[in-house]
Image 1 (cartoon, rainbow, N blue to C red):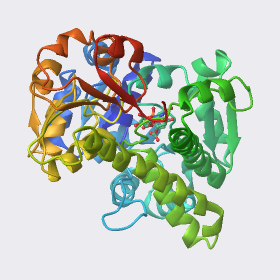
Image 2: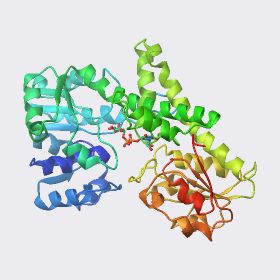
Image 3: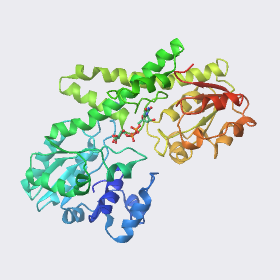
Length: 433
Ligand code: UGA
């Protein structure tokens, strides 16, 4: 496993669980040391016990050496990140290129290199040429492209029981190897689709583009609902009953964030531009714009609620991670809103069940509290920005005596509005009367 971040660490532990001998490789020595002891540097339910189990069983080890990993593996998974490049939409390919350039010169026997990272279409064909040129094994070091669809918060479940497997390869040997790697899932009936490189690469980005579009579609409907007094949650339920539409990913609110959807749609647009088909994806510009508008909209609603100006007000923020069950704050809508409000003069205090440390690194000037009650103490308005179970189940009475004004914006449409209103709160949601 080359790269032991979110994807690599999860895949490594799950492959060990499936019975394989696994060696994880990372250039970051401290990460390797922590993983070797069974610690993961992020929050992912179910992953740490699995990692410990196989660190102890000896089936899972970690190293910083390309040489060692090349000598060890029959299959090499590329699991490094492709973040957005600074100052442009395109993906930053330095980690993918770096890992292939580091590994390939040591590949001296037949093996399959398997790309899992989300990459611009055309990358696999380029990497296959690079590997053939650099590897002593030449053409016997083959490449397959096997995109990853795991969701943070469900990473182990999604890896052990994926809803589909996609493998881009034209080599029968590589295909046979991949069927062996995924034998358990295939036996359980998981669809296994063999494609060319370009299709496999496109499956991943188009899936994320579709999900992003679905979220922005319902958020656009939320704007119409607000203008007309309609209720977007009922609308979503009603259209979701149509099996062709489906109810999933139709939760209107603060919109999408995280380390995947936002940067993937932008990299996709950038790549389409390079390919001369930018018009095909110009709708993604609108998807992005609708999504970013959600953040500004919540700021505007909150400002209205405190009387038109944030100056001298206190705002309590519930949630910092980009979604519940994650401590990931990359492009987090919640922190974006918190930051904007602070810049407009409010005193902002944030609480999140898991993401406080990461949030404090990214937004060191915000105030952080160790509980929801502490974050909301003296608040003129409370903003519910990430729908953790702790917040969804919260009894409004715990905040009654501590806030300055009983006002809440439920920017995830996830709280029980009757309960909050019955408790005497001014409750506002997005796209609902
Ligand atoms: C996403 C995809 O769902 C995975 O299939 C994919 O493998 C992954 O990106 C990736 O490319 O690695 P993830 O970023 O973990 O997974 O998060 P999602 O569960 O997709 O949520 C993304 C964002 O959309 C969150 O901020 C969430 O709050 C928001 N969202 C989701 C909504 O606003 N409304 C919804 O109805 C659903």
